[in-house]
Image: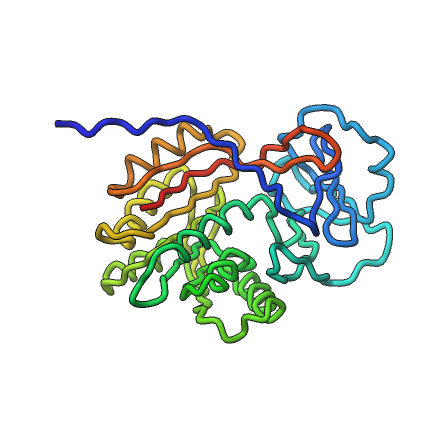
Length: 303
């Protein structure tokens, strides 16, 4: 008998738990944000509407202009005042650093706070003989790793960029988690996962935030549309046998990809049993009105 198809109905996850971050306005393909003490005007292709507070945009401390048509293209910041190289931020007591990067990012994706809470809850609500082990793939500046470490998990953080891992280590120090059990590994994500399968390793939780395109440190090529299904299959193998408290979190920033496509890819590629899937969109609330800015699509599972 064929197993029944999962019920694919969308959930909207809204990251409304910030003090040091505010989405002030958006529109005309851009967003205006307060990030700590500074205000940034950045591209946002999903902001198809008209801005509401046109006067606020003139007060931006920095404006990013992309050098190409793609949303992830490099570009240049224009600073209207002198800014430090980094500045401190805090989320729910977790301290870290923000900074402008050549790819319009500020070293933090505030919408991910919904996943940090989800992971910490999965780690903390199950009694285990040993600390939970969490694998963070495409880990970037390490905020998900630090949120899980603060919840008493052992972390393996993998990113192809040594520079990003350097930023993550700075965040570890800023968070006061220098003694937390975190392995920082510069490697291609899928290459590392296959190696862990051969070693017989198992993890209690896996977090993935893959790019649409990327290269590993040894020239490996990652293409989301071609490689995601195989990676999810292997991640399911790393989560291993049925036991409570396992979780998988997948975030995708691909404007042309529907959450339905992601949901069906996730459920068909993995054979995770004994838990529940959740699918939908992630969004940021505007500080002054009820609008939501969609940012990414997600799939997550928990046993």
